[in-house]
Amino acid sequence: MSDINSNLHELNRSNIWAGFVQLVPLSIFVIIFGLAFGLAATQTGLDAWSTIAMSTFVFAGASQFAAMELWGQEISLLPLAITVFAINARHLLMGATLYPWLRHLPPSKRYGVMLVITDANWAMSLQKFSRGEPAMGLLFGGGLTLWSFWVLGTWLGIYFGNAIQDPVSLGLDMVMGCFLLAMLVGGKKDTRVFAIWCVAAIASLLAYWFLPANSHVVVGALAGGILGAIWMESEK
Image 1 (cartoon, rainbow, N blue to C red):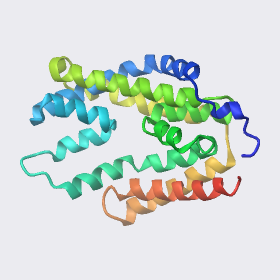
Image 2 (image 1 turned 90 degrees about the vertical axis):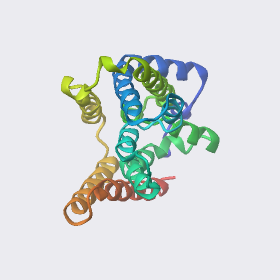
Image 3 (image 1 turned 120 degrees about the horizontal axis):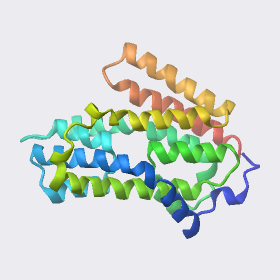
């Protein structure tokens, strides 16, 4: 990717704020899921401060819900850690696809941006990057928006969560999935990224058929992530 323009990986206050504002409409749905998590955590017995701290520092909705399922009088840390890792293993693949642009940032900024990567701001930013448009502000600023609204939703769920106890019954669980699919299908087609996704899909399917339950998430992400890292490194 030697032809990448320097402005594609520029990160400043102006483009961060623009990215923040762009993701505000989508973040309304994030509030709803944060509200559901706050309610679930309260019903599980987690105190308010611990619940808000989890959303603030973990910022991984699916993993947090999974953790609540394992929460109890005696928490087994190993199954909890494995479950959280499995659910978030897709971030290995996300990092690989973003590598051509992130590698131009100093390590402190690079990993700071990755702290707020979600399916939504990753898909939107990758689409713009693939068209040769700058998107680092959207990647980081949009992530900050989603993080802020997730924490806000968690707080609302703790104190006002009875308003929406089952977002799935309203079809809200499909919003992020449909949004992500639309972003990926509408993006510029790239042979390298297509190959990475194919390898990840095939590895995931093989793991689903022949390995223990839920291992397909980790295997698929590792296969695609490793290929993506090797392939993109070779293009320096």
